[in-house]
Length: 313
Image 1 (cartoon, rainbow, N blue to C red):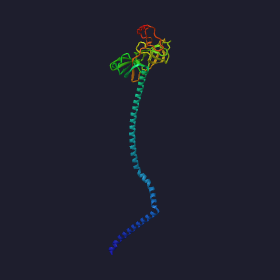
Image 2: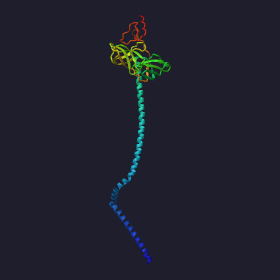
Image 3: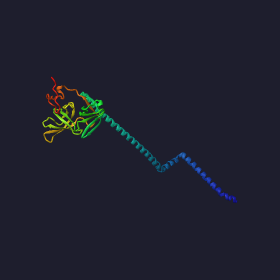
């Protein structure tokens, strides 16, 4: 009897546990049958997911934030690299465009030079500019051509616009040209419209020549084109020198002083033309332009040169 009484509570606990297990199994079987027929558990799961979904969203914020920061960092690095690459490509393209524009400008100037030579039937040679000195007291060009290439002292220097100056020194490989704007340079000129003879002096400025001593009665107007007159024999006649842009009385009031804008582009260009030889005009018209009356036989030129002998009959 005592042994039976000792084990009875354990058996009762086992019976209760077994009954609970059977009850859970029965409940589970009932729920399965009801869900299979009515599908109400699926609805409950859907409702439960709606309730839990905000929690999932909140729980996923750190992960999404980390991914966004990572993606933004990668995008920023990529954009920075692309920006740097495009900037370098733009600089290279700009340099190429500038170079092409420079070549196009040089080509246009060379075409203009050749056009002047061909249209005027001039015997010229092309001389590249090696250096230029535009100091107010010294206006010179150093040419990359010398006596070995046929350059000689006294040759007229031209560009597409007109007279540039003259060669004053010819070395074997290089030559020096004195610009007509040099303070020590003077060139006899003539007004193309009225044939009035004048002398233009350099002022040490690449954009200005000065013509002093113009008589008040002279037929000279602002806008007149000045050409080389050919007097003195240094420059052939008929080459453009510049355009008269201003006239004003001198200090005495007895004469006018003119300011001339040079026809040549003295501060630009990479090459000039050296005049080799000009065909000699007929004796009776030597050194004259069309419409200019010949000087009296035996008369001296304005530059002080000795009179030329009269041609024999």
